Length: 499
Image 1 (spheres, one colour):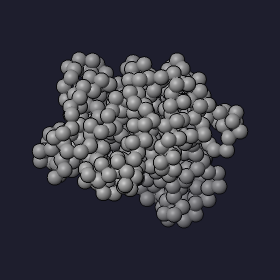
Image 2 (cartoon, helix red, strand yellow; image 1 turned 135 degrees about the vertical axis):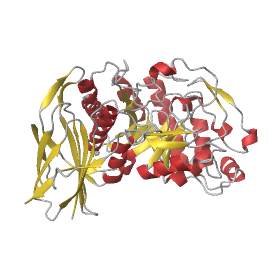
Image 3 (cartoon, one colour; image 1 turned 45 degrees about the vertical axis):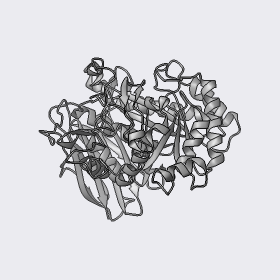
Image 4 (cartoon, helix red, strand yellow; image 1 turned 90 degrees about the vertical axis):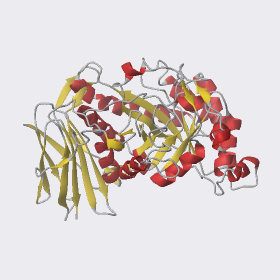
């Protein structure tokens, strides 16, 4: 049996968890909106057409913020098409994903849905085919109380009170040649700065997110971030990161080491942000919004065969297996370990499209990745302890030396709880783990939750929704302040302690 040690000290803190780190993402893509969160006429839908079964699962996850309406979709989005009487809304060809967008679900419907879900909105503006003027108009429509053209138009549409949206994405993946209206770093940096400046003239309480690289493999990665911030440092609050991971080669140890790659990515972007701050003698930190992250590869082949110009096709519908849940757990641990600088993160996406929740006409169910996301969101709020992990390592093909054990500890002083999240990545061996918690006098083990399965490729389906589901372990003991536990081979673990 492998052995490892988790080391924490109540006075050595990484930082407070911003609850928005557990955010998600709904794009007008595939069945995320239509048949996902919205399906008029379905027996599971409410009077507004919102899927109640989906809403119940979203509320279970306690999703604090949802990015909308894209993604690539936003770079061609005419927001005016999506508001007002439904019978007057135009259907349009949607160039990002090659489908027809009916606009029967739009901005105000999403605001209503978000209230029911208990989530805030992270709104994206179109800096692809449009620009600062339209972003300003959209902000006026959403956040102005009244007495102006667009705020009064919102009232005409039945929304007396402003939506009061506080976080705004300045476009999406503007470095990508697949993006409508994509730009050079200098072009984008200038328009992002001016858009943010104009928007903050109108509403100084908002925060804005500048586009970082679309992924770590972009040829302009690094220089893009530096140039954009060189132009926009004074005007923006966050830099975005996007990254997806997959196991196309069937190399599970290498796949599970992807969280090491994510960790390096975050550290690299933090360094670039701080380099620009130093160059400008700046006073503020540019923090990070990791507003697209997940496993995405299962559906790639099927998506190549999709018919174009239809409505809400089964697009990007990854069916997640157990090993995907292990990596998602490790990625959540990685985000939490960087809580001092990662203030917003969005699992992409929320329903049907590379998502923890799946629906059919007859029901909704939890995919395997639902569980680590649920545990982290519900139990991961508080202060991140600077968690040192002494663990055996292995050599991964892509990322070099990778730890067998990923772990982070969250201390919620208000509620007197301590939570240890951990993934044992060993496919062959259980791991005996110790942790000295004598500083946390009076704490006792409340429960040890485990997600594991003998079959790494096991999936949850509508017919068998609990194939991969959490169980409780009795392996954890706390005696005289010394915690001893066993993490089973290939397992996600949540140890909850309380007074």
